[in-house]
View 1 (spheres, rainbow, N blue to C red):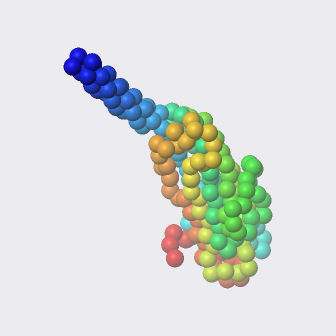
View 2: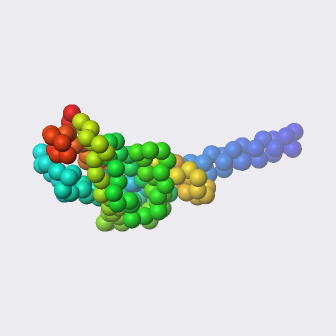
View 3: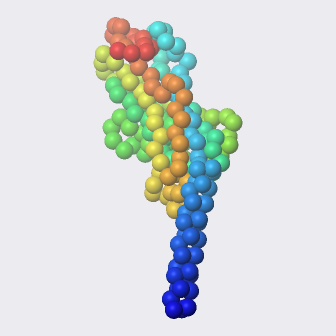
Length: 178
């Protein structure tokens, strides 16, 4: 009978230890999680006009990690009816037409944003041109990053997209909605 009780005590202690370690891992993940801030910037203000026969649209994608751990992410740039004239100043890949993926490892607690610059022109003469960014976790990297990324918080700062409406051939105005 004493052996049976000691087995139950050992099993109970093991389960309590397992539960405590899972709670500690969860709290650790919540406390040190990466917090990703990102935004899109262009010198073209709302209701201003750009003439693509004269100039390209300069776009700057800004991203920062204000959490406590490294983040392995993909910065995803999608563009419709636009053609990149100047590709990103970082290593990138094209997943499909109109989509550029930039793999990044962001270090924590950066006060300034990391910038990626591109230039776009119109593709034909469409009614609208649309450029946007988003962030995806990079799950193809080692397990430490996968643990940190599972708690990752994305915090997009407005704006995250640029919408241009056609006024006349080659001339577009930046608008807030269709």
